[in-house]
Length: 186
Image (cartoon, rainbow, N blue to C red; front, side, top):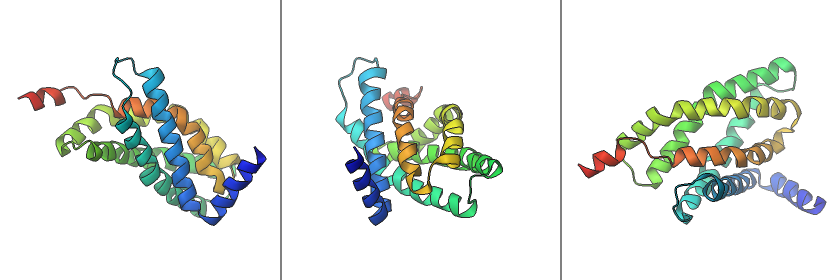
């Protein structure tokens, strides 16, 4: 196990953006697989394309934006004093969290070929739930993150927790919005 950890850290040092993107790809992929296998009880068969959409979001959006956002946050608010940690958590949850939700639902919307109106409906129906659901997980998780996790390891820590949270996001992201199906039939 220490060999894998050493290789991960070497890759993180040599190519931090790629490593974090791959870490997020893994976290989002595992989260969606778990959601489809153990949470969804709709009787539908496993949807490979759904997993690809979620995994690609992790790789293309979550890992890359997380690298830059958390790097910026650490550069502007260095240290682990309680006030600094609280400020980072507050910024993460009041600014980054809603932006992340907009990116998440927007990415899925584009990948699924949905209209801008469907995106707006999804935001109205589920963004508040996503943001508030995030508070239950990410306020305590980021308090630990910003207080104890070295900056280079933040995205790995986040993705470890993100696997469980992604089960929720995967479910929410793929939940039908009332009214969208009726509009298509008209």
